Each structure stands twice: as C-alpha cells, then as structure tokens.
Length: 82
Image (cartoon, rainbow, N blue to C red; front, side, top):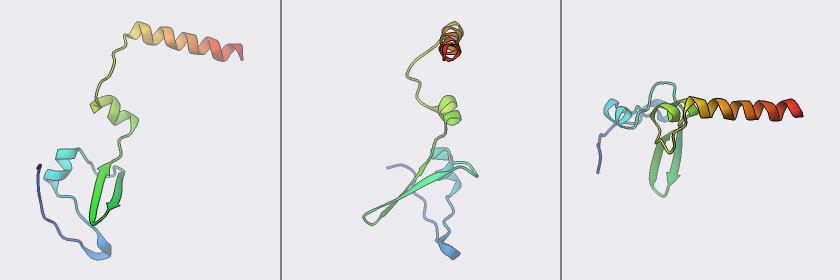
C-alpha cells in the first residue's frame, strides 16, 4: 500500500488533500479532479489535460521534427483542397 494519511471532513463537507498525497499523485491547486463513489469508498483521481500528458505522461512513440513538419504540410494540403 502507498502513502496513508488521515484527514478530517470540514464545513460543507470540504476535504483537504494532504500535501504528501497531492505530491505523490501530482495534484496541484486549481487542477480538476474526478470523484467517484464505489460502494463505501471514495476514489479521487486527477484529470490530466493534454499539456500534462505531453510533459509527464507515458511516452508511447517518438516523432522527429521533420516527420511532424511533413504531417503538418499534408494536413494543410488536405484543407486547401476543400
């Protein structure tokens, strides 16, 4: 099991995510999260946007700047023909 921290539910059912937990799962102030109820458990997951995924996400491929430029030109040609 990972990090375990106890916290308290505050007024209006506000829960503060303790710093060690937030750091472990890379949740930052202002970030969107998903909260799911599953039986008697609450699951809190960060919602990753495209920028976060580009910076920190699992890399599944590699593309060179030249390949990117070629693809960009192909897409522009398709749009110009419409």
